[in-house]
Image (cartoon, rainbow, N blue to C red):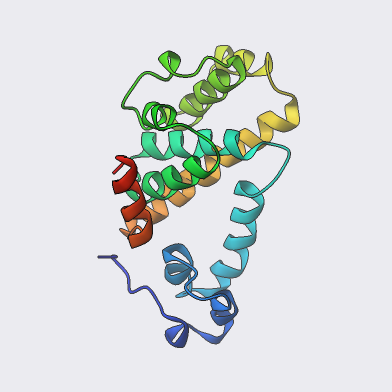
Length: 184
């Protein structure tokens, strides 16, 4: 059960109701609907940070699942495990991103390994990221990709804390799918 009431469309303030136009928008929106002023800026930001861009869907899901696992966000790990499957990640790859296995034993692509190591450095530490971590990523990505990877990790951390603090529920359909896949 969520720590806050998740607002149905008829309960949402007028400024939040457009976000319900296609049906249930999910727990992040239905929680943010309490403060439409935040909803109006948060959703475009999240869409820009996590949506389609120069980075592939697969690469973004590597970052999102890994950062969510490091942050201990049940909602984000479960939700993005299903998304990662749709993005083409294998069960073994997802389990390693979720910290069940060493990713270096599963991922052989040097770019993906560097992205995962960067995600670990950004999400798992305090203070500056080491020059070694930056140098390793720079071997494989351009500056604009480094900026975007870092923003994906940061936006994911923000959503992780939001979802965890408010105990947002995972959609029943997602729970069912993860159960069928043996990933719950």
